[in-house]
Each structure stands twice: as C-alpha cells, then as structure tokens.
Amino acid sequence: MSIQIQLEKFTGPLDLLLHLIKSQEMDIYDIRIVEITEQYLSIIDHMQQLDLDVAGEFLLMAASLLHIKSKMLLPLSDEMSEEEEDPREELVKRLLEYQRYKNVAELFQQLPQLSRDVFVGQSGFVDCVEEGEDKSEVAIGIYQLADAFHKLIKDKPPEIFHEVIKEPLSVADYVRHIVGKLTQEKRISFRELCSPGEFSRSVLIVTFLATLELVKLCILRVEQVGDFSEIWLTLDATDEQLAQLHPDKELLAYG
Amino acid sequence: MDNLKQLIEAFIFASESPLSLDRLSHLSEQSKADVKAVIAQLLQQYSAGNRGFYLAEVAGGYQFRTDAELAPWLKALNRERATRFSRAALETLAIIAYRQPATRAEIEYLRGVDSGGVMKTLLDKNLLRILGKKDIPGRPLMYGTSRHFLEMFGLRDLNDLPTLKEFTALDPELIEAEPLDSV
Amino acid sequence: MDNLKQLIEAFIFASESPLSLDRLSHLSEQSKADVKAVIAQLLQQYSAGNRGFYLAEVAGGYQFRTDAELAPWLKALNRERATRFSRAALETLAIIAYRQPATRAEIEYLRGVDSGGVMKTLLDKNLLRILGKKDIPGRPLMYGTSRHFLEMFGLRDLNDLPTLKEFTALDPELIEAEPLDSV
Image (cartoon, rainbow over all chains, first blue to last red; front, top):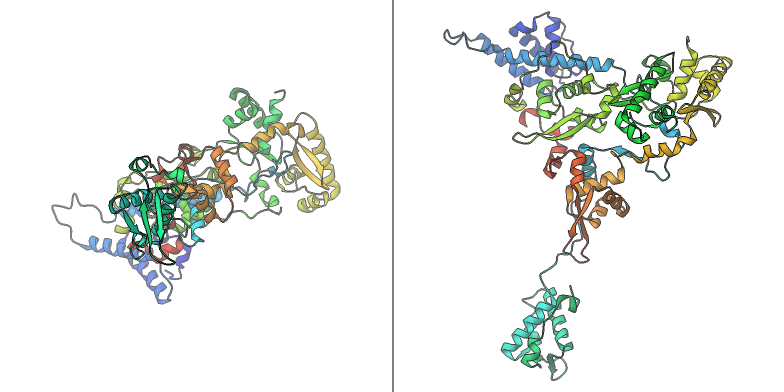
C-alpha cells in the first residue's frame, strides 16, 4: 500500500487506524494486529524520516499497538485462557466509539448550518432600538467570565495596588502611652520619648501628634532652657483630670 | 390585545434569537395556550406556498429562517463569513453533544488526541459552555453544548440530535479507569 | 429561476441593509422588469391583512420592517435580554467574581476606565452585593458577587468557578509546552 499518507489529514491516531483498517478491509472486531502495527509504524517512521513533526499522540498509539502485539504473541496459559481478555479489546472499543462520533461529525457537517446554509432576518431595522445601548453585547457564561478576567490580568503588570498598609498606630494610644510614662517618671526628655533609632517614622509622627494633643488639653507642660537644648516634658494635671482623660479616636480625628 | 397573531409574528421577526413559548407568552401578556394557537396558525401559514423564509422551531423557540435550498443564492449577499468547522472541531462537538456533561479527559480519551485548543476555539465561538466542576478527585471542569450550538445546527433541543446507529456507549468506568496519561 | 418571488423575498429578508432594485436584479440574475413585477406582488401581499411586519421602501431599497405601532411592545424585547451583557459589564463582573472582596479602585485599575456606572447597573440587577468597608484610609466599599450571580451561572459556590490555571490549560500554546503523555 502507498505510504503517501499525510498525518495532518487525520484528526488523531484513532482516525489513522480506522483508515488503515478500512483500507485493508479488516473486520474491526478482529483486527490483524501484526499487520496493522507494521503499517502504522511504517507511516510514522516515514514521517520521521521526512523530518516531520509527529505528534506525541501518534507515537503513544504506536507504543500501545506494540504492547498489544507483544501480548498477542505470548503463548496463552492453559488455565487462564478462558478468563483472559483479548488484548485488543480496549482498542476495539475505543475505535468503535470513535467511529460513531466520527460519523456524527460528518452528519453535523451536512446539517444546514446557520449563516452557511440558512439565514435569519436582521433585527437591526426594527423601529424601536433603544437609545444609547451598548452594541457590543456578548452572551455570557462561566467561560466568558473566566475569559474576560484572564484577558484583563494578562495585560496588566501583577498587583501594584497603591494600598496603604495601616500600621496599628493611633494618636489616642500614644496619648495614653505618654501619660503612662510620665506618671511613672515625672519628667522625660522629648528626645528620650522619641529615640529615633528604635522607632519608625510613623511612630515618631504619632508620638509628636500625641504630644501636641496633650499640650492642647493642658495636661502636658513643655520646657526648654535655651535654643536647641533638651525639651523636657512634665505632667501638669491632677489625678482627677487624668482619670477623665479618655482620648477617643474619632474625637482626635486622626486615622 | 386585538391582534395577537400580528404581535407574535413581529416579536419573532424582531428577535435576535429564537423566542420560546414562555417568553412569547410573557412578552405578549397572553396565556401560553393562546400564544400556542397563534403559533400553530403561523407555522401553517408559512409552510403553505413557496415562501422565501419559514417559521423554524429551533433551540427551544421560534425563529424565521431561510430555506437551506436557497443557500447558493443567498451566499452572494455581503455577509459575515460563515463559521467553518474543522473535522477536529466537529468530532469534539459530536462527543460533547452526546455525552454532556463531559470532561476534557473523556473527550481526549475518545478522540485519542489532545483537544484543549479545539475546545477553546469552540468555547470562544460560544458553541460550548462550562457546566461546572465534576464531583470526582481533581474536580475537572464539565463541558456541554450551548444554546447557540442548537441554533447553529437548527436543532430544537438535544433530543433532536440524530440517534446513533448501534450506539452502545463506551463503559464510563473504562474512561475513568484509563485516563489519557496512563494509556 | 423557477420561483423568483421566493428568492427575492429571501434576499430582502436576509440582507442587513435595504436592497435596491438594481442589486436585487443583479443578485437574482433576472431583468429589472421581472424583479419589479415580483416586488409589486410582495408589496401587495404584505400590505393585505394584519402582518407583524411589512415590506418597506426605504433608502432607495426594500426592507422588511415591523409596524411602528407595535414599537411599545417590541421595546420590551430589547429590555429583556437578561443573559446578554455589555463587554464592560462582563469585565466588571469577572473581576469582582475572581477578586472579591474588591474595591472600585481595584476594578478600575484592572479595567483602566471608570466603572462606577457599570457597577451600579450590576448592583441594580442584583448580581453584586456590598460586603462592607475596607479597613484602609478612605474606607472604600468592598464588593462581591451575590447569590443571584451563582444562580445565574449555575454555580453551587464560588469554588465552582474555573481557576485561572484550569482556564489557561485550554490554551494550545501552553499545551505544546506540556505534551499529553507527561501531563
């Protein structure tokens, strides 16, 4: 038989096998496996000699055929022969099933197809098109949803949302913190309160704001002896005043 | 409604896709029985005499369509190109149409060949749809045909698919037991 | 051509725009006089009796049109297309489905355009819901999909949505990198 077979003409290895079976006028239920394997392999070989890409599926089928062939050649053990399966059985089932769908595919090809054989009226000229309608409408399903999302993120660099990460800092907390510290130590320097090496910039800012807040509430006294000298903080409030101090986030109006 | 027949005819004519009885009844605010009677009249009216188009029952609804025999003439009209189906695409459609819900592994086992690309094309053309995930390990996606598939091939519903001769479905256990990667 | 009337009727029906006498004569390969006689018959036929649509002479050609008096009814047809979405609505819904809880800023970052209007429409259609406020400066609203969304897409829960990995597995280019036997 002619080797001039183009693999591209076949939709897959099953399609090629069916062609070989048909052209050899074999009974699909009783495939001459040695013969068909040889032919199949020679076609694949030929393709490879021509340096053509043979798809993995065709090679996979070649391996399956060889496997079946070797099983067929093994002498049947006497006890098992009754129960043992025909090594071809699964392949035959697949071929039969595939053949049915191949026939349906041909039938589909012959059915009158929309926009090829059959046309519908154009609804564009109905006298009632709504104004401002989005014309690029799409039918929607799970696939369309996944597809739309995939297309959107494919074009975008990954995740650069300008999200502001909120640190767990609040001016109110620092007001309490400073008052607590001053209750213990009576007097501390502003530098000590802020010791910049240890705190992040946002901590410094919140500490500063809290200090200003306490000054505004007339609870804190700030003293400085001369320009650029140490700033000293002392509490200037009665215990009663301190007890009433309930710094509230909303009230202080800082985030 | 004075003239229900006129209205139903206009609805079907003006709609982009086939209109079901339910939908027509809802749109016309008339009982399904009344609408059905009118449709029967229309079906008869359009089948009598050589008309340029007829009232077709398709995809669970009604739609005016031209006769397939006029296709050679109508192709000359400047219209969008018809979808051309490759054999691979038709095979894949055939398998999914008859076996839905079908997983990709089932389709590839039956076809003996990778089908991801073909399936994507069919999904893009809205002929397939994803039906959800199958309740088996790995939860693979399940695929089925869409309404547009019925419209494309002029089928009323899936029962309208031609019955397969000597169709004995492959043992589903075989498919489960022999996924592609182990063949 | 045996039945010119049938053919002319089909041409006018299937054409996107009005067809002139010249064009119809050319398409049907018949003389203008013959085509004109047939059109006269069709005009008469469609004007007699209450039809849902009629043959209109418009823009130098012929076209089937619905009666203007039916417009109030037919408007409902356009409004009711429940399963059709604009590209903008689909994109927005997709982002929220996959990204929820999502803020408007995130959606607009991905789409690159203002999405307030689309989001309002989706909220009105009960496909989205507000999940609360995000704990970041400005406390923007967070959006998610609704139960109605799940029903509409036939999903049991959000896990039923295909993951992006599953989705891209259909892409032929990715498949080539991973031959079938190694999957």
